[in-house]
Length: 134
Image (cartoon, rainbow, N blue to C red; front, side, top):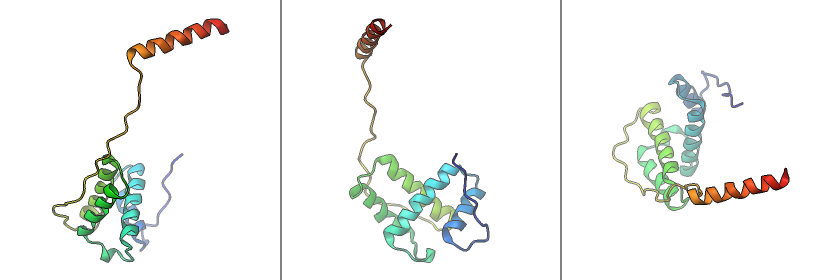
């Protein structure tokens, strides 16, 4: 079972304060984990040592990096964008302005499915095997 880890509300650690803030907003635990993951990756990408170093203009190179060098899917890049917008607008209370970054163009992977004819043939084949086994 996926249970949120306890976090001290008086902690001075940046990610602890962010977690407490996310929970105070009533966001789902899955959203909390996802946002924290993308924010950690953003921090690591830029090599920040203090939250004071973070600038909204640093969002663009990170999102472009995801598209160009990491070949992320469109929805993955959007999730990272949502996490960073939340970080800057909601938590850090900084205006972001217009963002100009390389959009991901890797399409979503759609599952391979059988046509109606193929499905009927598979079912017919399985039905025949079932009679042989019984």
